[in-house]
Amino acid sequence: MSRVGKSPITVPTGVSVTIETHAITVSGSKGTLSQFTIPEITVAQEGEQIIVTRANDEPKIRAKHGLMRALVNNMVEGVTKGFSKKLEINGVGFRVVAQGTDLKFSLGFSHDVIYKLPTGVTATIEQNIVTISGISRQQVGQVAAEIRALKKPEPYKGKGIKYVGERIIRKSGKSGKDK
Image (cartoon, rainbow, N blue to C red; front, side, top):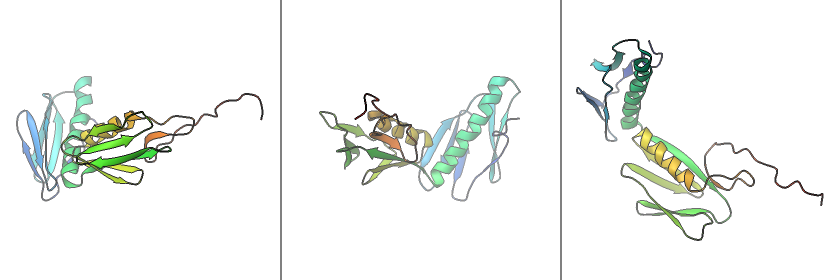
């Protein structure tokens, strides 16, 4: 069996799980998430645990077994705790301002870049740190990646948008004649 797929998911109190033939819905204190099921994978609730099993040992189905378990676990964790990613903005004159549900970035272009946050995702700004948070791990990661892609960090001075804790490999610059 899959190492990830065979471990059961514990359902905390206050979380309700609805398992249908083609979808799984998880509701908690932070909201509701829904996910389609993979046809060869069976998801069942036994008391306070969710068990994910597969029909056979074909390689494609074995690969999807761990995936389905991880998706359901992320839904349970999302409706109880939520997910967040932090982005850091480095550069002279680089800044971000919240305008309602939009983020207005000044990134050294001739114009400001406006990013519209999708529903279910919120952003908080503290100086040069933007925190993206929501209940869907996939959506939070996608929004963070799209914001980072607005101005990726460059290798010479490190200017741009990067994840907090991300290490940017620096280059030395020109190696012309000595000064």
